[in-house]
Length: 97
Picture 1 (cartoon, one colour):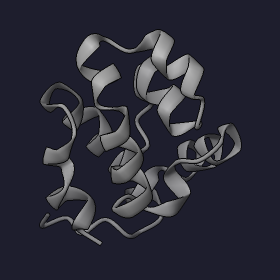
Picture 2: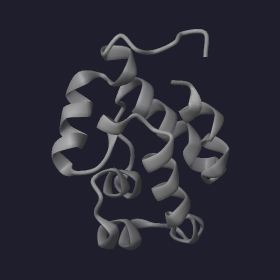
Picture 3: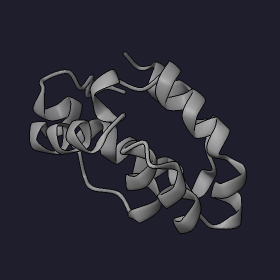
Picture 4: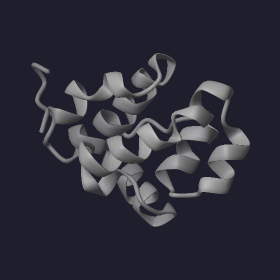
């Protein structure tokens, strides 16, 4: 389950905390990351800074390969994850991590 932590370094440094807070606590991220999580490419590109625009492939690989499946993919999944409280709310957070 901690693979999502081990691979955070594949994402831009200034976004790593937001991704971790979303996965672990379902703390809503900014508009760019929300668009990524909702699988809205056009909105993500419109909201991205240059670093994030160049890293979109890395986000796709990260979320598909390493993040919990329920935390991304559509606006409905985004809403459900937010409602759940993330890994913490689901009782799946390894606190020592």
